[in-house]
Image (cartoon, rainbow, N blue to C red; front, side, top):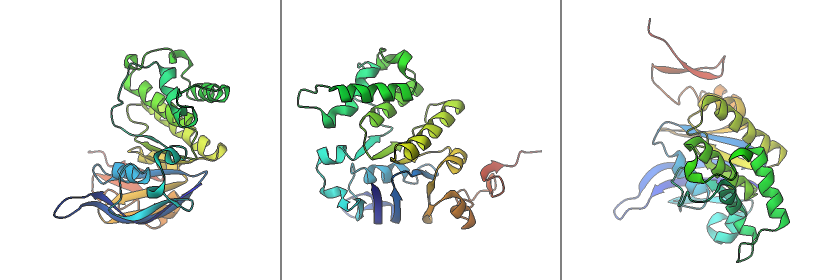
Length: 259
């Protein structure tokens, strides 16, 4: 599976003039890639992910899954190709953890929602992968924000789509769990041959763990491997402030402590 973004303009249609968040976005990513979308607050990372997932129409341009324009896919077709976890509050927290994760199998069940043995096996594998065994019978409203975040990612993984789109998957997690989750996403992309695209403010971790980065700033976008972006000074321009600067040697953002 491959995502191709052509001349994409994202934003919100308005009567007099469209509100454009970002434009002329172009990139291509393939199965096995872990793509981090980085940029400052309000730059349009979530809008880009929603547009790529088919949840929001582009103002202009196209998003292709292989040779198919996502705008031409039915909701059922799209649900078998792309799974999404957004930062929006979930509709209900009254389900148990295992039930919430099981919802990922909906695109494959009959109209009664009956789970096959294959579905049950997939659910068990994801629960084990995310180390959710101890809380799988708890109600979702009993969970911490970090635990609930892992459950929602579990639902996306259970959907077993070739493309997974995650908006701020490390939000609410402590540093150890941020690292563990991003390393897990890296291994899932490589070993299960998935294409995973996620937004994050954990830029230093993304530089270390992602195969590609989409850098969004006020001057436009840049896409490529972390090393290629460093050579083009794309990361150095991400935060043009004296308080924070990018060190190419350590491949990380840092700051100068006041003396």
